Image 1 (cartoon, rainbow, N blue to C red):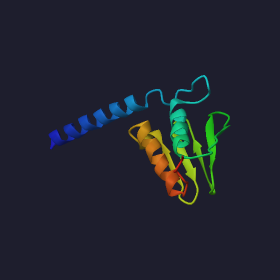
Image 2 (image 1 turned 180 degrees about the vertical axis):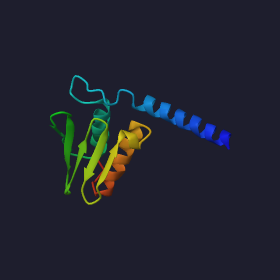
Image 3 (image 1 turned 45 degrees about the vertical axis):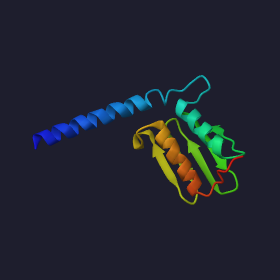
Image 4 (image 1 turned 30 degrees about the horizontal axis):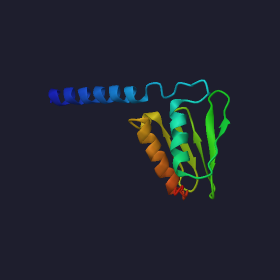
Length: 121
């Protein structure tokens, strides 16, 4: 019984170390006022959605707002999280995903679920 708990604790500690390594520095604001996570999220969306534009918002924290083309859906990209507001709302923060790439991939799924045309040419 004790060995099961010991194994679980080791697994949890290993997962926590991996999470910290994956997210290290992702919320550090750069000279452009954005975090690496925000830049990656913008690049991922821009690669699959045509005619997309982001505006900067916020006082204490800079976040990006984007009205998705052709539908009544918009999203916010925070320093280490995303919110999608539309027919199928979705919210996630760094704590919810093991890596930034995993969160960004799930963001694209949420955007697609709201009816955004992702067939960029």
